[in-house]
Image (tube, rainbow, N blue to C red; front, side, top):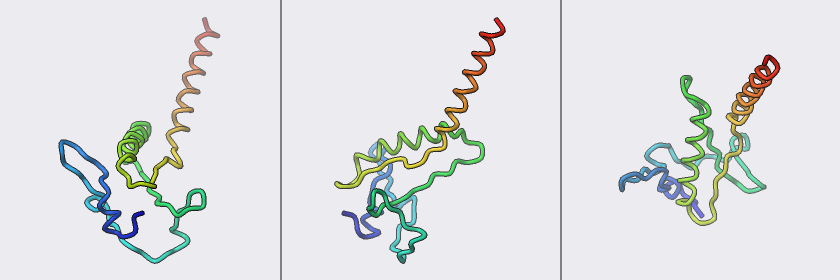
Length: 113
């Protein structure tokens, strides 16, 4: 199990052409005071929570797809006993809304013809 900031910082978050990017290179990893307002649990166990916020001009469906792909690539490199999952994804609602609009347009075309 990972216990120190150095151990968490050593997690490889991206690997390309033989180069590795570690968590400590793209994030600040530290031990902080336990604060219930900032703690995360999943199924009753302590966990790490990470939020991804898209830029104003980014496509939320593309961002969500890229996050899922990155998570799929990252998960096999996690230490034994660690897993990952997407807890909340607003792009699901956007995709459903788009699908609903297409269905409505199709129904309107059928009714007009």
